[in-house]
Image (cartoon, rainbow, N blue to C red):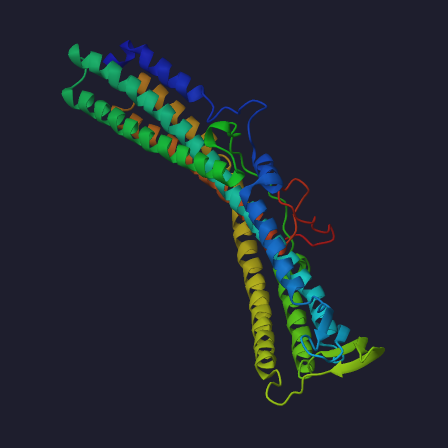
Length: 427
């Protein structure tokens, strides 16, 4: 190991690499998580798709509630005969005697609430999808920085050891090992570049832009982890703020109104008829009423269908309530576990750098072998990668909890949710 001290360039390069931060933040044009969600919220394809589905849903609701149009008839009879012509001018005005149309219009009010709530749920899911894509892209680019640093370090070690091997200062096994490690890190670098590019392309797609026009991504840092409400407060918040629950409640009300409407549909719509008639040279008036008789069609199929839709709506409402409660408990437990691990996980990168620094100094002074140095380098890179993964997991834990309870824990959350009331008890 005495020969190692005669090569200070290795230690210098490694120490300089160790001083490089994990990933330098981009300038003002960098895209952070909040900006990505805001851009997607304003003009992203998921938002446009949500708006289109809302438009379709509102149109479908309105389609079944339109009043029937009146009809106007003009008729000329006795053409081609010696009889005097009979000329009719008649207006037919449908009249909702049973109240079916009125009940359908009342159902439409709940239907519009259902469609709007469903669209809001889709929008919130879309924001979470964009957040996951940004976290994946930022994490992949951070991991690429780590792999690139490790590759530069191992390549420099391999170069120096190759020179020392020619000079007979190290064994052939040492030279082969450092060359192998450098080649392995180069392969890992290629894979990391591909993963980062794929993640960036996916994020650009969700933002509705081409990948070259996407700004650089801000560094991935862990979020603030404020205290969460207790399980009772979290469940109450979810039931009050989750639009999925509101949508299913509105669907039940809509189905109940439709059942009432189809029951009234046993009687068809009455038509009031009125107009003029010119016959035999005299102008007279006419008045009539037309009504379908429910002998063969008593609207049985429509009533059965409406009853089935009501049962289905109730089942879906109960299922959503159970799903929301279970999701709150799961997200709350995971968030609590992430918070408890924060004090250790947030220092992974610092401790990883320290491991590498100590190993490099020990290697320079001849206290450890090359194998031990390489193991320390790998452990350092793993620690920095773990920090990135934990930062992404911490963000997801917070965002998924806020999505589960339907409210933001604090005002710095990027999601478009109401702020959790400050009276909620902390854990």
